[in-house]
Image 1 (cartoon, rainbow, N blue to C red):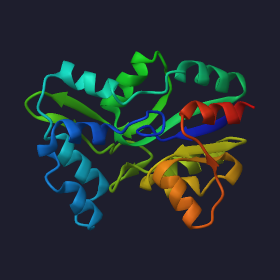
Image 2 (image 1 turned 90 degrees about the vertical axis):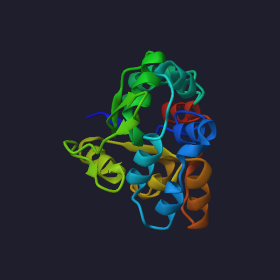
Image 3 (image 1 turned 45 degrees about the vertical axis):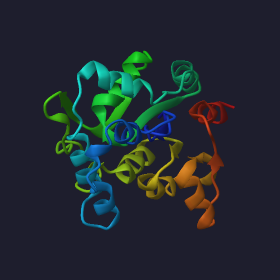
Length: 212
């Protein structure tokens, strides 16, 4: 049985979130959707889907934006090091696999990605869909990260989790503190509730600590 590292993508494996970059580039697309999510009027998935559908540009321009997310530059070497030490990397994201898979391809990295499927149309935006056929399906987030972690726990000797945002809190609490990696909002929240974790700033630190 392999050991499994489950990682969030936006803001974790990358420095910046796709959401933040497109909202900065196209401020008109926000439309109050995120505030509606925070007020409980929309699900996380519905808010992101509505925002992403408002993007209007050529695909080449959107590719330039996703490159600005700044994926971990040493990701390929980190994945190789993890594999050599008996660890498999799995992505669990509430974002869209359209940009995740493109960034991984640019990084020449092939790993399992659990995220919301989608396609881009210059006239209709980034169209994100619920992953109805995924065994990790969640109507609120698209991908249920808790289910991803529980599945890993059922079949791996060791499971680690790395994340940075609100959807990462529940799955992070399923793994022991020495294999719980957090930054940004997640790190602050874990500190607030008195839960130990391993802090990191750059994703390669996660791989380095696991392999040490």
